[in-house]
Length: 380
Length: 130
Image (cartoon, rainbow over all chains, first blue to last red; front, top):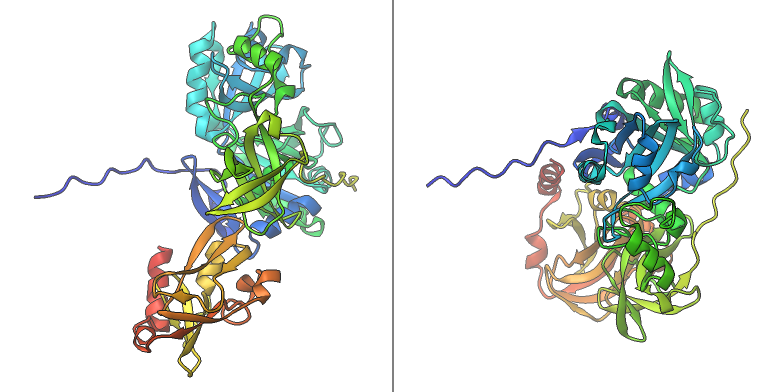
């Protein structure tokens, strides 16, 4: 008898920079349904990480989802959905926020850019883009204002103390020198780029939204212009260790449908009492009033070993929490982790342990971030 | 990628070198270290511990992942590379030399003889890479 043919997994998507990654020796892996470089041959995670902290790194983040909300009433629509208060954003401003379930858990975390009085760009995680869009439509009063435009955008992040110098050489414009959380239009190759002073590394830098056809010319222009600035392409491996050193949550690890923003230590992006509230604001206002039962903490191992996601956190020999992300910090050359622990054990200095495959390794709670980025270097 | 012809190899990408006195030096291959990425910690069983062919003799942690190390032959550990304590990156920079991990005094020579030679390992790596 013939057995049924094996189910064919859906084809992985390629970003407009797929060929560029292959040419640069990118080790391509599956991530959230996309072919993405985890690191580049001849460089590697640690070198790419350190190049970003010391000089400047280029990241292809074209897999991220882009949703445009525009038309009369767009501000009210977005404000009803996200945890931060976008009515406070002037044109050209941006903020981090969570998209929440009615029960307060996180649907996703995202960036909201105000491009105009009635025009917003919402940038969401690739793994959640479809779920987010469905959630938005389900809770919108004017769903016709929402458009999933992920296919129309590529995204390149330029991050590190030399990011401003590099961008000023290739695509100079108003965003260079602005504080964090701004977005401006720069020209490049006869077209427009949306250049935001945001990022996921803690470094000074930019996230550049462009047409897919602009991605490869921009990528190689940045690489070619940055030789003397120490520019390096950076894969997803170092993207993860860089954000981990800052204590930034990654959806699927520190955030999920049943975790809220106060637990994940992004309470600064939660405005449950803003006018009109938002989906999930009532239960979240209660969490704010009572304090969350568990909190995300940074842990530094004082014993040898490397903590990994799902390892148990121990207090006096008893499991009290769980590691959500862990690595050997390339900057500190020490094992570090993000973990959830009961709030009463979350104070810096608290002595805990991590169960590393059966061995209790001593760990101590440390404040975020694990690493202080260098200041930006002045442009040429 | 280097695959020295004087060594024998396991399917799990360990190499073994015959020291001519019934003992075998063991490490991981160039292919293994490239796939592991930056090695940050190598945990090895203590000298004197008995190991089984195919059984664990240690763990290697890289920035990306954790992997078990498997003994190519049955015997007991007669030496471990203590230099890896301070310089685990030797596994990346010199996988077949200073990045060696343990020396095993084997119960018999038969298991070593049955390991893959360089040509067979080359084929194995090519298949793993696809």
